[in-house]
Amino acid sequence: MKAMVYRGPYKIRVEEKDIPRIEHPNDAIIRVTKAAICGSDLHLYHGLMPDTRVGMTFGHEFIGVVHEVGPSVENLAVGDRVMVPFNIYCGSCYFCARGLYSNCHNVNPNATAVGGIYGYSHTCGGYDGGQAEYVRVPFADVGPSVIPDWLDDEDALLMTDALATGYFGAQLGDIRHGDTVVVLGAGPVGLYAAKSAWLMGAGRVIVIDHLEYRLAKAREFAHAETIDFAEHDDIVVTMKRTTDNLGADVVIDAVGAEADGNFTQHLTGAKLKLQGGSPIALNWAIDGVRKGGTVSVMGAYGPIFSAVKFGDAMNKGLTLRMNQCPVKRQWPRLLEHIRNGYLKPSDIVTHRLPLEAIGEGYHMFSAKLDGCIKTIITMDAA
Amino acid sequence: MNENTSTSTTELDRPYVADKPAVRETDDELRARIPGWGADLDPADRPAVPRERYAPEVTGAHWEFPDRQPEPYPRERSIEHGMLTPVFGTVAPLHGVSGAIRRYAYRYSEGRAAHWLLLIAGDRVDSFGAHVKSLATLHPDNPVTETGVLSEVRRHGWSSRVRSRRVDRSHTWIDPILVAGPWVATGVVAVMLARKAVALARR
Ligand SMILES: NC(=O)c1ccc[n+]([C@@H]2O[C@H](COP(=O)([O-])OP(=O)(O)OC[C@H]3O[C@@H](n4cnc5c(N)ncnc54)[C@H](O)[C@@H]3O)[C@@H](O)[C@H]2O)c1
Ligand SMILES: [Zn+2]
Ligand SMILES: [Zn+2]
View 1: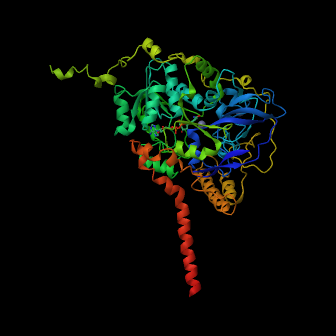
View 2 (view 1 turned 180 degrees about the horizontal axis):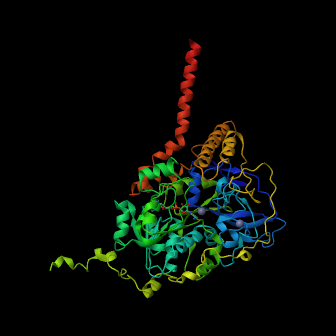
View 3 (view 1 turned 135 degrees about the vertical axis):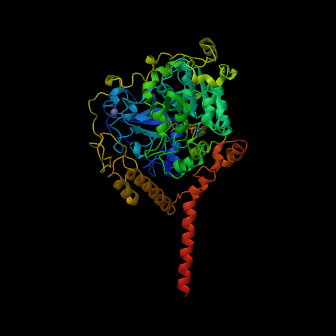
C-alpha cells in the first residue's frame, strides 16, 4: 500500500509499505478513504515531539471502510463505513471508565502522561496513522463508529478531531450565558471553538490571529469579531480595552506549541526546541483573561518545560482547563448540531489533495500558503 | 466640589465598579444572527459534564482487562508504567545507535528532562542516519521533492507573505537553515578533510 512516511524534520515522502496486520483480537484494519492534516501533525513534521521515528506514518484524522476484523470484534463488520476518533483507547481502564478516553492507560507503553494517538510518535504509543491506504485500528469495538447515512464524508472526517476538539475547548471554558469569549488562533480548532462558544450562550466571541485570511473566515464562518495581533503593539492591552478593561471571561488557546508573536519565545520553543513549545498564546490567555476567569487550552505542547507565566495565573485566581479531546464523548451532540444545521464542519476545508501530493500539503499548511486552513487527503482520487 | 470626580460615563470605570458590562446584543438578536445560539446553554447538559462520569458500560468494551497483544521483541516502556500495556504500536522498532540512545532514555521517568532530551537526540541521529543510508539506495532522500518546498511556487509562497503583515515573516528565513544547515556543514567539513588528506598525500 501507499503511505506517507516521516524521514526527519520537514521531510516526508510517500512510500510503499506492507498493509497492516491484525495484531490483537480486537483490531480492525480500515481502508482509508479520506484523511486530513491537523495542526498537531505540524508539531511532528517540525521535529518537536520526542521519539518521532523515521518510518512512521502520521495521520490521526481519517475515515474509511472496514477491510478486516479481528476474532473478538463484535460491533463492526467488513464493509462498514466508519469514522475513527483520533484517540486509541481500551474502554475499560480506570480512565476510560470515567470518560477520560484521551487518557487511556492500556494503549501507550511509552508514556503515562498521554494516551494513545494514531500516527503521533512513540511518545503517543508508536502506532501508524491514517495518511495511508490502510491503517490498523486497535479496540475496534470501542473507538470507531459507523457513519450515519445522512452524514457526508468530509463532515464525518472533521468529527474525528478538529470539530470535536473545538467543541470540547469551548466546553472546558465553562461558558456561561452572556460571557465574553476570546479564542486565540483561527485555525480549524479555533474556528470550531468560536462557533461552539455561541452554542453555549456566549454574548461576545472575539478571535485573534495574525493571518488576515483566517480572520476573514472567523468573521464569516464563526460570526466572530476579530483582532489581527500584528496590528497591535501589545495585544494584552488590546484584549483589556475591548473588554471594558475587565478581560474576557473565558480565553481559549487554540494555537499551541508553535505560537508566533514573540521572536525569542518562538525561536527557543518552536525552532531550537529548548522549551516544550513556545507558550506565547498561552501567556496571552493568562494575562488577557479576567481575574477569576477560565483559560481552556486546546493547543498542544511538548513534554518538556515551557516558560509559562504561572504566577499571573495564580494571582488572578484562574481556572486552567485542558486535555486532549475525548472525541467520541462529543459525537452524539455534535451529530445533533450538524443535523439541525447549526454546524457545517466542511465549510472550512480549503484544499483537497491526493496522497502523492501530501508533501506539498504539509508545506503549504505549515507555511500557511495559498489561503490554507484545512487540507483533506483523498485516497480514492489517487 | 471637584467636577473631575464624576467620571461615571467613561468606559474606563468598568471594573472599578460592581456592574457587569452592558450586553451588546440581546438573546433574541443573537439567536436571529447565529444559527443554534444557546443550544447548549445549560452547563449541566453538555457532553463533557460531569468531569469524571463513571460509565464503563457505554464504551463498547466487553472485557474487564483486554487480551494481551503478543510482544514480538522486547518493547521499551516508560518506567512509570507498572507493566507493559496490553496493546501497543509496533512500527519502527528500536535499532542501531538511535535505538541505543532511545533505550537509554527510557531509564528515566517522564518527569526528567534527560528522558525527553535523549529522545530528541535519538530522533536527530535516527533521521541523519536514515538520510545517509538512503543515498546508497534507489530511493535517496530528495530535499527538493520531499520537503514540499516546490509548493512555494505553486502555492503562491511570495504573495501569501508579502501582501500581509503576518508576523511569521520574521523567522521564515530560519527554516531553510534548519533543514539544509546540517548538510551544508557536513559537506564543508568533508571537503576540508578531503583537501587536508590530499595535501598530506602530496607532501
Ligand atoms: N487538544 C486536542 O485534542 C487537540 C486536537 C487537535 C489539535 N490540537 C492543537 O490545537 C492547535 C491548533 O490546531 P489547528 O489545526 O487549528 O492548527 P493551525 O496551525 O491551523 O492553527 C493555529 C493558528 O494559530 C495562529 N497563531 C499563531 N500564533 C498565535 C498567537 N500568538 N495568537 C493567536 N493566534 C496565533 C496561527 O496563525 C494559526 O492560524 C495545535 O496546537 C494542535 O496541536 C489539540
Ligand atoms: Zn489533531
Ligand atoms: Zn483505557
